[in-house]
Length: 178
Picture 1 (cartoon, helix red, strand yellow):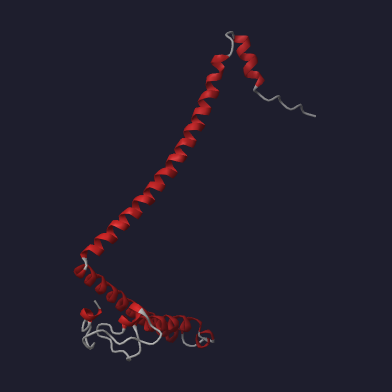
Picture 2 (cartoon, rainbow, N blue to C red):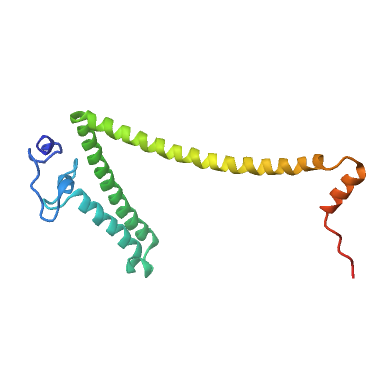
């Protein structure tokens, strides 16, 4: 598959890119991005990481803390963030292109991933349904218990005096003022 990816980006020689020391797998494939010249040993991931570090460094830089011109600070931070966002877009574009190539070359893999995602979603929804059923059973039991308590007065012997005695037995006695 790597051989078919060669020449995908402008300025990239045909064929697979040479492996980098210390890099394995897909990271070495990120060497070039559309329209961006790069040193030969730099990857998109390396640039994304360095631009993130530059953003963070610009926010905590001692120069900015000491109180230079606010507009200069804002411009510097905006430039760092814009560079990070541009490289993040390039990285996203790279992976979207790889995904498109995969879907063309191995459509069964895409279908397998879709099926797997659907199964995971079904499991998540089944768990949610079970959670709601458990709550429903709990509240049905609470309602049934309340219903049983309201039916007890029918079990009391007939007669107004017996009913009043039973009802007054459940009422707490008033506290005597001292």
